[in-house]
Image (cartoon, rainbow, N blue to C red):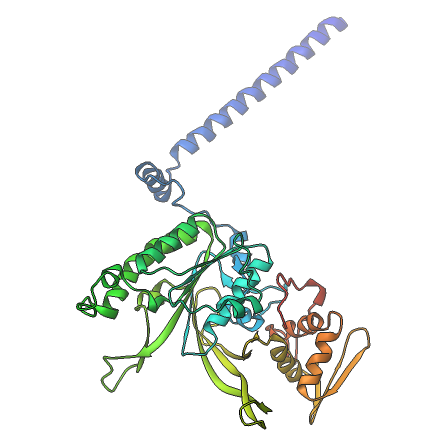
Amino acid sequence: MPKKKIEEKTKAGEKGVEKVKEEKEKEKEKEKEKEKAEVRPSPLQKGLQSVRGALKSKDVCVSLTRESIDQVHPHIPTGIFIIDYLIGGEIDASMQNKCPGAPRGKIFNLYGHESSGKTTLALTTAAAICRLGGTCAYIDWEHAIVPRYAKSLGVPIEDPTKFLLFQPNTLEDGVKVIIGMAQAGVDLIVIDSAGTAIPEVIFNQSLEKLGEGGGAGLLARKWSEYLPTIQKYIAKSNTCLIAIGQIRANISFAGYGSKSNVQGGNSWKYFSAVRISLRAVKKLVRKQLNPVTRKKEDMEYGRVVRAKVEKCKLSETQGYEQDFYILDGKGVDNLRTMIDIASAYGIITRGGSWYSWERENGEVFRSQGLESFMEEIKKARNGHMELLHRVLPCLGTHIGEEEGGTEFDLEELDLNVEYPA
């Protein structure tokens, strides 16, 4: 047979094979299309389509991914590292905890007795966010903020682009400020305090009729009406709302139950993601000259405050409590708390009244008396921050275990705020 005919038959055979392959591929595609047609949509997908068509807002459904589970919750550092630990929980092997600070987009309820550090903690948090370039709106219903003290804590009271102080007369005016600031995207809003707001109905009463408008019960009902709306706005703008509450006697106490209540009503318990109670447990006293008697006497210069987590939706720290120090006129003493923790874990050695600490560069601090030891650390370059780096891993779940402990890399610690000494 001639070569040309053989080549023609070969080409014809190849074309036939290609046609057969194409037909098979078409059949497979048809089968896939039939399978897709036979697969019924999930009831959730059907419901989602109908919901999107019925509702005005299209961002009702939130998509959750693996990243949303593992990521740290957006937060604002409080400037008090022991409070950040109580909110966020223990540091894990990846050098993170769940929320090391006041949570964004949520309500942080802070309450306690008088002189327990509530306003100090709020102002310290305001100073921390402003140092990071953020903004704070402070609503002072009590009309009790002392500008000199706020400035000493680091609050930029003279910079209206970072810090604004509001002193509204009525509850309704304050709520308008909260919603307006949240819509504008302010990072932090502080309410001081929720129980001292006056409903407009009572504020507008004459002196003769004052006290006839419902009292504390009216305020509680008003807050239960406003909080759902406030919660919606701060969640959208990722704003943190710190609400301070005062403790008062329970007028309906009948021999059982709680003898005290938090002003502002029970709605704050339900809408708050974090609730921390503060209580002064000890006075700090030292010998100093009394200018009245011109004698050296034991005089109070601060107090030990115990913070207890009553509610926390962000970590497993509910029920945790820890002490920290507040000095009159100076605020929270972070360094003293660090020294307590470092001494407990052997980072700082103590013998009698002598304190000793060896730094990573080999330098040794040794002083007699706590005050002189703290002064040495403050004077040393980066001494305060180095001690913080050494202390923070001690708050992790793997530190102190006899077996299987995980070593932390101190350089991986994410310190997004410099905790003042």
